[in-house]
Image 1: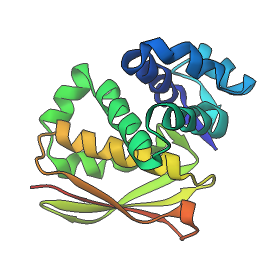
Image 2: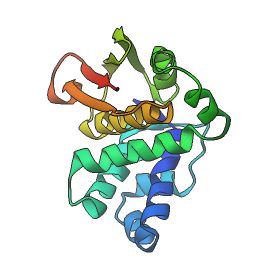
Image 3: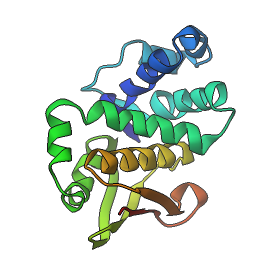
Length: 184
């Protein structure tokens, strides 16, 4: 399982921006493989998921979120959406309907995780289910990070009262991960 460098890059950026005095301590807590990746992330390169994203995110969770996996990974996902959906992309998202953004979810998802499959299901004016049916290294950390990204992307598109729930989870042994998303 691989993750694109654009998604990896936001992890050390998050630590530098939110916890600048702890950055070196965080880097030094990583394995040699993870240190090598975060020290020089190339946004165009695909990296192994575990050392590039799961381990660094787990260290962020341990150091800055008191071990709260959901809160830490969710915040990293929100941060990643803020970074990736800026400039021209932010305008595109802001002026597109939530339905249009969600309908492109499978393309967006495949640009970050390989191999993976995410598809929209039950699209309604104020809600949609996203089904992650292919992700061969299930990770609770990554599932929560994706949920945070979805939440923030919907907020950037102008949605109010956004709620994202994970109701099924590959990481918990179920056949798919289901993100139930709603907004006002």
